[in-house]
Image (cartoon, rainbow, N blue to C red; front, side, top):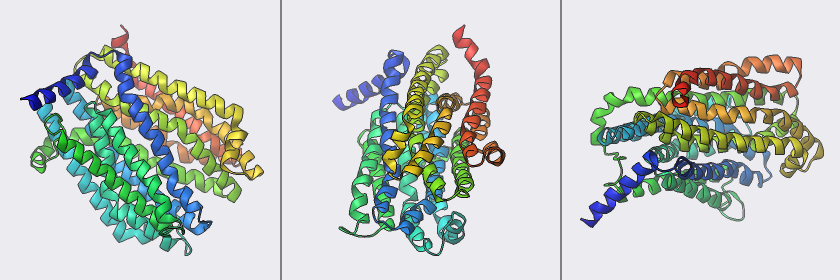
Length: 459
């Protein structure tokens, strides 16, 4: 009896958070853990490169870079099912359709598992041409293959499912638990990297970094599965395979909403590779400067992603509950947070760019070049900080076509043509103006598409 009462209390607390808690409180409880998770993830994404770099072997560092685009595609797979599922589940909970939400969770889990295993198999069969296209040379191929074996062939399943489950848990108001699992895995990866990579310990080099990543993602997955098992009576995230008989009913809604996120992430890989290709024509110093700039530039991006991840279930739930005024208030407050941080970063980067870039490299000429790159690229940050939440708002409300249009505009349609144009007009530095242009155009498109929906709550 007591256990049943505790279960009922937890469900009611989550419903209260979505339905009646003060807007700023509800947004803070969802957004703060999501942003914290993204900040740790920002460190985590640099951990492999940092510790492999301590080996002083350029071929080892290059091997990690070569394998990274294929690894990043796992996030696209996770977003396809995780972001799509989170939107559908949040809206079903807003309509109090808990049983259907459980069916969606099962489809997302097993669909993500099947897709990750298929990608892993295809990579295993085609890794030679894939790594070659990504830039593997005779010096780097074998190390890249070893690293990719751990993070993709062996690690695809836990990587996809851990990120997927964090999105689904956030959809029912468990933002703290969702972020705790991801932070746990990220910190474990950072702790394991030196143990597996460095010669003082296991001396596995880049392959050790791959193994550390696979283990940490598996640990995150087990963390989430243990939470779901412990609270199985209080959660709609029941992932038993028996629920898969309803897959046909829910697959179109999940995949149509998740597809824009998956496409945007996949095209981001292509856009980054294209920019790197153009800049590499100006020498290794320019390439190093771009690498430094992208690391710094990721700070406001990851913050905006965290805010957006926290907003998605709140907006979706209240939109489905026909409380669009509350959904709009939540979105507006979250977007203001995202924009404020982006403006702060832009100001700091414009004023202190040389000092910031010199932290990452002591060589003065490269640091100065990176400072110039940063001052140009950071102009994109305010546009990006609003564009990303708007895309997620479309997804939360089930408006898949609008989300897809803005996602493809932001990454895919404009980047490569503008690289050709701007590089011809302003050699090398022109490449840094591509992202500000693309984010500005994408934001204008997102605002135009959102205009009809925004009239009702403002009336």
